[in-house]
Structure formats: C-alpha cells, structure tokens
Image 1 (cartoon, rainbow, N blue to C red):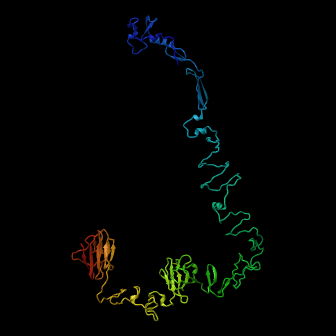
Image 2 (image 1 turned 180 degrees about the horizontal axis):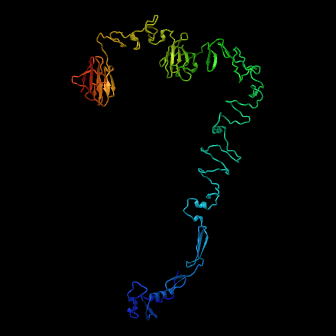
Image 3 (image 1 turned 180 degrees about the vertical axis):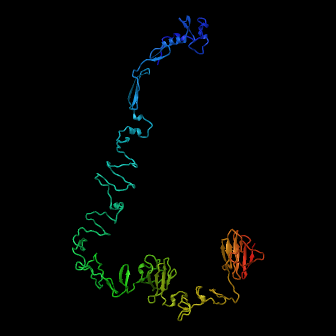
Length: 605
C-alpha cells in the first residue's frame, strides 16, 4: 500500500504543552519537547502562513493528515484504512490435487487468483532414493519404470525372487536356471521345446529309485549288456502251452513249442549213477525249472559226473581234479632268487657258485597265507641264506642252506603259518650240514644217544658237557670246574671249598615313590631309595633271611622311618636309638644278624 500527501503545510506544526504559555510567533525550536501526546492535549498550530497562532487537538491534526491520503488505500478521521478493490475473484483456492495461480501487478498487488492442476517437473523433486525420480518419469510397464500394485511388471533385466509366492499359471518361461534348492519334478505346459540335453549318466545320477548302470533303455529294440531278473518275467512273444526256451546261433530266444525233459516232456533223472560219459545235454534232455536239475548223482568213488577211478579229489579255485602224482620242479641259477607265490608245492633247486641270499615275502601276505609251502634244495657250491621280509624262519631272521651238489643236495621244507615260516630240515645228512653248537637232542634218549649232542662244524658230533649247555638245560647244577675255568650254571646250592676270586660286583638299585613300603627278601643285597617329598614309613617284616643286608637311602625331603607295622615287624636294634634317616642324601643300613632281629647302622636319626 502507498499513501500520498496533498500538502505539507502542517509539517511545521509542533507539539506544545499549551499555546497560551507562549507569545505569538515565538520560536518553536525553543519550546520544551513533550514526552507524549494524549487526546486531551492541545497542539500548537500556526496558520495563515505563520501569522496566526492557534490551538489544535490531536484529533483535528489526525483527521487532517488522514484526509491527505489517496490511491490504493484511504484513511478516515478515526484512522480506519480502506483498501481499493483490485481483485474481484475472492474465495478459497488450492486442494490436494490443485495448485493456486496468482496475477500480480507492477505495484506488487494480486489482481487475480485461480486454482489450476499441479503439473510439477519431476526432475525438480528432491529427498528420494537413487533412481526413484528417473523411474517416476517412465511409463508403467516399460523398461526402467516403477512397479505399482496391480500394474504390469514389465521385463526387468535382473532380480532375486526369493520371496515370490503364488502360482505361475500364466507364466511363459524362457531359460530357467535351477539351483541346489530345486526339489520335485520340473514340468512344462504348452512349451514344445525340450527341457535340456542329458546323458544317460546324468539321468542315472538324477534318479533316486533305480537299478543297474549304463545307458538308458527304451521300448524299441534296446541293447542290454546283462539282465538280472529277481522276479518272474513274462515273454509276451511266446504264447501257447508251457514249453522250453531255446537260443539260436544269433542269440535269439524263442519257444520250442513243447515241454522240457526226456522225450520232450520229462526232466533228466537227477538220481542216476554217474558213468564215464554223462548223458546230460543231449537233444531230448533239458534243464527244467519245475523239476530237479539234471545233475547225476555220484558214488563213493565217483563224484558228480567226473569218473576218477577211486583216486583222491582236490579242490582248488573251484576246479575239481585228481591229486597230482608228480611234483613240479624249478631250477634257479640267478642271484638272490625271490620266491614267488607260484612256487607253492614246488621243489625249487638253487644252483649258484657264490653265496646268495634268496628272499621270501612276509608270511600271511597275499599269496603266502597259512599253509603255503615250498621245498628248497641247494645244489650249488655257494651257500643259500633264505631271508624272509619281516617274518622269521625257523625262529630266526634267516636260514642257511650250506653248500652242496646235485648228487648230495641240502634241503629244507618251508611252511607259512600265517605270521612266520617254520622249517623241516633234512636230518638225514651228516653233521657237516650244521653249524657249531649244541644240537637240541633230549638227554637220556633211547638207543645210543645218552645225552645232549654237540657239533664242531667240521662234521664231528659228540656228547655235550654241562659246560656246553645253556641255563635252560637241567641236570648240571652240581657241575664243578677246574682251576681258572668258567662255570656258566649256578642254579643250585653250591659249596665253595677254596678261596674264590670274583670280578667287580654291581649291586641293584630300586626306587620307591610312595609313602609306605614293606621290605622283602628280594631287597637283600640291594639299595632301596625313597623319592617321596613327604614322610615315608617302611616296615621290616619278620622272615628275612639271616645275613640279609639292605641299604636304605633318603633321596628326597621325606625322612624314611623303618619301624613301621604294616606287617608283624622284626625286632629293630640301634646303638644310637635311630629309627629313621637323618635327611636328604642320608643312607642307613639294615642288617639281619639273627632270626627276626635287624640292626640299624649309618646316618640315622
């Protein structure tokens, strides 16, 4: 709004407290300024071009000043403002779907107002997610548009349909990629194209109920490698009465038109006695499924359909044959012959001029199971030391066959027991076949052998003396020796009739880690050390042999008391009334000088 003044004649009017208090035409600037103006105040007015002094009221001045206004607004004498009408279109404008349009003149006044449909520019919107504004500007159902409820989805370039539900009755599928979570059968309705190309192996892997392997089989002229029928089959091309089947040279199966058995209907006799020539399989004899099989019964000397004339039958790998009447031989002249599983039951001759070490695999391994055996003979000038892998042979790591000849071989039978090899040496040869040492002949045997024998390795065999025998032998506990001789066996009560000189004697040390212990006669002549950090109580029992001497050592912080009563104790005597060890490292002696009487000596307390 703009106000214009018609006259500025009152611009010089000044407010005064009372015009009567001043002389006419007095200087206005010299008057005292009023602090405020109220309706009852009088104003000092100069009229007639400054020649007359008058009093005026504020209402008079305001009415005069308001009357000077004109234009787009007027003010009456009481100060009320009235605007000029510039827009006759009044009322409410705008709604949820319409915007307000204004017309403004040069003075800034609204001269017209109306409601119009809002058509904002989508690109000017802000505050949305990435791509939303762009999608809002695309028609629904086309590429790049938004998807509205009930609207067309269009053709998205990609997407994850994890939570899609419902059916796809109207869905036209293109290439469908499946994953491991797809279950059940995949069907296609109205789609003439194939679901894919699969090999027989892929189909076989996909099927959960199946049998057999190989290629898929279909109804027209399939090729089947083998057929294992576990239930009765119906051969639809064979009709008529019960009849036998026959196979021609091309492998075609057909019916014979008649029943099976002798004379075309009777099965072969399953109880007939076998003879040199079996009658099974002739033109009128067939195998039947409804009768006993046509296998003829043998007799005590004739088994099955094989006539063996009373000889012994052997079964090896399911083949029935007569027992061999000869032994297969094999001559090996190479170095260090390795025995083979095929050597079983053979006589293997080893012939080499130099010493050899033939090998044999571990007993019990493949081909060398229990009962595998071979007869080995050395006919060469060199020795043959048979050496198994891991297993022993004759209780040792190897077995020596001495040098021999074809006229006088050195032989041994080698038999696997499943873990090691046992031997049956040839004892018919002279003693030169044996190494020096004692032969395992029984003492007191019958005949001319009256004791153990020994061989000197040069072919001389003689009776063994007690000095030749090991501790395992018996009957030599009273043997005596000559001056300077060696007595290897002292397993009985011996009487020493002269001064004896012994070499160094090393005692035995045992360690006890517990807190209690009872001495035994086996502790006599030894040192018993106690290693517990706590106090130890040891009991000296009655019954220790007279002369028993035991050294007791405290090996740790725990003192060892020897007056325990775990059993009935022997009487303990000490010159210093000691009953235990003094401290770590202390050793006391226990000497049984009489029956059930023990003397304590040493570093005690």
